[in-house]
Length: 118
Image (cartoon, rainbow, N blue to C red; front, side, top):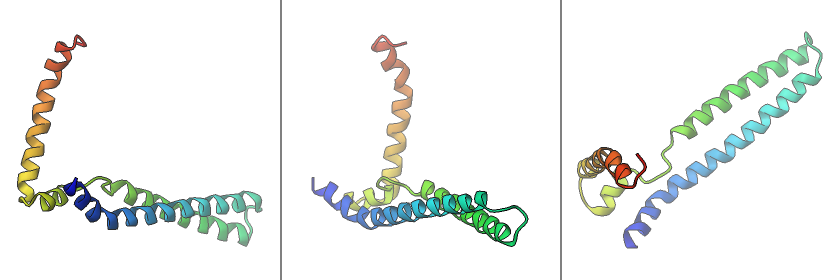
């Protein structure tokens, strides 16, 4: 359990960053909805309509960029974090995970046949 607690400590700052980014993303989403509602209620061709359309498009662009950024954030522990906790080089963790993944993928048909699923 000590290793898991150490990983949690390493992840705590990242988890805070992720929750703040999610919160900002939700706020941006509601901002987009507000701009869209204002845009739908205004008369096309007016200065107000043009201003709201510009604001809506910028807000939507920002929302999509934030969503893309959040999608790229790794939610679990990184190989580097695991290596730090275990006290081994990162390459060792990478290699071990690669071998496990390869072994698992090779044995899936065998295990499925063994269990009567293939």
